[in-house]
Amino acid sequence: MGRSFENRKASMAKTQGAKVRVYSRYGKEIYVSAKNGGGDPDSNISLKRLIEKAKKDQVPTHVIDRAIEKAVGGGGENYETARYEGFGPGGCMVIVDCLTDNNKRTYTEVRNCFVKNHAKIGSTGTVAHMFDHLAILRYAGEDEDAAYEALLESDVDVTDIENEDGKITVFAPHTEFFKAKTALLEMDSSLEFEVEEITFVAQTETEVSGEDVAVFEKFEAMLDDCDDVQNVYHNAVIS
Image (tube, helix red, strand yellow):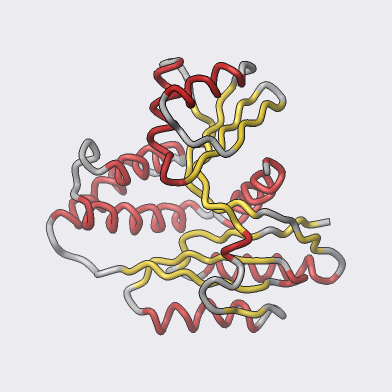
C-alpha cells in the first residue's frame, strides 16, 4: 500500500509545482467547505483540515481568509463536485476530482485530456472500486505497537500501519481521519505529521513504459492545466 501512495505523492509533487495554481485550488476548496459548513474551523472540521493542509503547503493566510470571507458573505460562484474515471496512457487507472460551476465545460475539458492522449474516459464506477478511499497520517517514530494500541483504544478502524525508515504511516477509512488523528495526538501531543490527508490509494499498480511515458506526462500536464481539476489519482508506475 505504501508504495502506491508514494508513487501518487511523487506525481502530485510534479503536477502541482505552480504556486498560483495551488493557491487557486486551495482557495476554491476552502470556499466550498466554508459555504457548505460555515466559516468557523472549530465547528467545521472539514474546513479545519483544509486550512491546516493549506498552511503546510505554504498557502498565504490572506488567500485562506479571502476564500472564507467570500463564502461567509454569500457571494461568489456555486461550485459542485464532479468525479471522472477512466483508463490513462498505458492502461493505468485514473480518477479525476473537480470543483466546477459548469459541468458541461468541465466534462469537455477533462474528456479532451483523455481523448488526446490515447486514454479512455469511462462512467462512474469504472475504476473507483480498484482504489481505497483512505485517511493517511505519517510521522517520525518507531513504535508502531503503541500507535496501534492508541488507535484501538479510541475505536479507530485501522486499515494498516507501516513502519519504514523511521516513519510510522497509519492508513484508516477516510471517515476515521479526525478520530485517528486525535487518538495519535492523545498518545503523544508532540507529534508532527508529515502527511495528514484523505486520498485514494490504488489496490494494484500498472507499469507505464516506453512511448507511453511521454504520453502519460503530457496527460498529467493537460489535466493540471484544467482550472476545475482539484486532484488526480492513478495507479501508474513509471518504469
